[in-house]
Length: 147
Image (tube, rainbow, N blue to C red; front, side):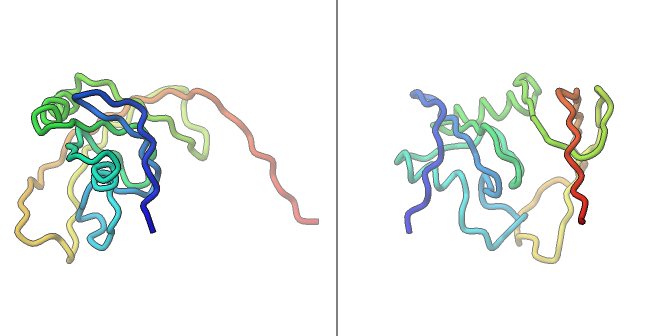
């Protein structure tokens, strides 16, 4: 069975931009060692050339994903994401009643498990993660009453 193609939003001689669907890992990860589908491989097979992700989106997150078409471009873009010079925006549907605006300052740390990849080394130091948000809309869903 052929892999469903990814929606390519933009492509030139340096970059390719896709719409990553939810429940797809960007690349092989310790998050799910048994997964066999990855955006990087699907896109590579789809366009017939190697790609280098400039950033990641969580598995459950859908959205725009940027790849370089060379390791140099992928690296340059990745450094811009790390430096915060690229503006990222997320739209989310949440349950409850959040304030009109605010920020969440919650550093992310690696949560290792018994199935950690062998031989990989990475820092255990927490990474800064600051998210600023503002509410765009609010809606009350109807309550279903059993009769």
